Structures are given as C-alpha cells and as structure tokens.
Length: 109
Length: 115
Image 1 (cartoon, each protein chain N blue to C red):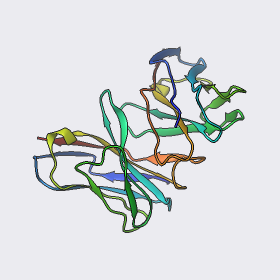
Image 2: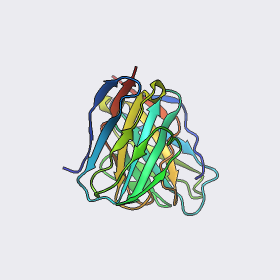
Image 3: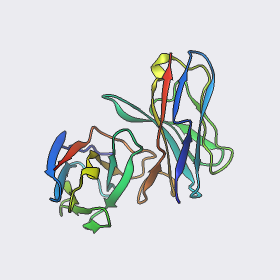
C-alpha cells in the first residue's frame, strides 16, 4: 500500500472547523482513503473513507482532490472530545491497516 | 450494540507464564486481527484471520499464537511471555476480508506488562 504524510500536530479552537490534511501522492487506483482516530490509548475509531468522491457522514467530511494525491478530513465544529491522534490510511487489497504516526489534534477552549 | 470485546483490559504477569487475551465480536464479521502498539512504533499487525480456521502471520508474529475455531472469537496466546511483549494490544474485526471498502472495529485494548 502507498504511504501517507500528515503533519505531526495541529491545534484548533473549540467550535471551529478542524481541517486535517493528508498527502498520498503515490496512491494507486484501487486504494481507498480511510481516516481513523485514537483518543488517548483507546482503540482506534473509524471516521470515514472514500475512493474518489467527497464523502460526508455524521462525524466528518472527507475531501479528496481530483488527482487523488491528497485529501482533507474536516471536523465541522470541533469539540474538546475531538482531541485525538488522527490517522490517514490507504488500503487496497491488503489484509491490514498500516498506521503511520498520524496528526495529534489538540482542541482548545 | 456492535462491539469488539477484549479481556482482560489490564494484565501484569511474569516471564514465561502462559497467558491468553480473549477477543470476541458480535457483528458476524469474517475478518479479525490483532495489533500491538508501542511508543514510537505505531500499531503493528501480529496475526489475522480471514475466516474460521484460517489464520496468517502479520508483521510481528514471533512469540504469539492465535486460533479461530468460531467466527466470533479470536484469542491471542502468549505461550512464554517475555518483557519485550509488554505492550498495548488491540483486536479488530471487519465485515469483509481485509479492510477495503469497509470499516474496522477495534476493541478497547489490553495493556500487558511482563516482568
């Protein structure tokens, strides 16, 4: 699976939108973009995934560029409970999720 | 409620004393997997199972065993634990073989300390 690059940390004020970027310039045609988050040392939690089109669910929106080389996870109204490490992962036919170091999002008052 | 349940949540044991960490899912998922998480190394896959009686090694299988006798359970066995197996362990499951096009559910984790 292709690799992803994420900033190590970001801050966001509570109530504002958190935009978390991810670069995946070597993504292949059958690879999905997945986002998970891990709050403290809890089990990772699925957020959203997409292949080509932008996606939205009750937790977040996923914007994928037309060339699919990068994506952005948007938490529209961040709260303190959204403080976590966010992982951008690519997966095609592999039998595992390869977690990188992710982005540590700190939401502040 | 859909969930993956691991037990125990915390365990301190001594070197060489066999132990089993249980994992159970209630979603009728075919695919299950074990990961360990260590500071600076992220989550690494230990073993996975694509269905009952089908298991395979992940990236760091040494010192671990697994079994998949029923669909819902996927225990992780440490026959002779050593201090380098001190880690945070997660079990995961998903509907399809592999993780493509479907979400994975993770357990709450088992923090194991081997002294």
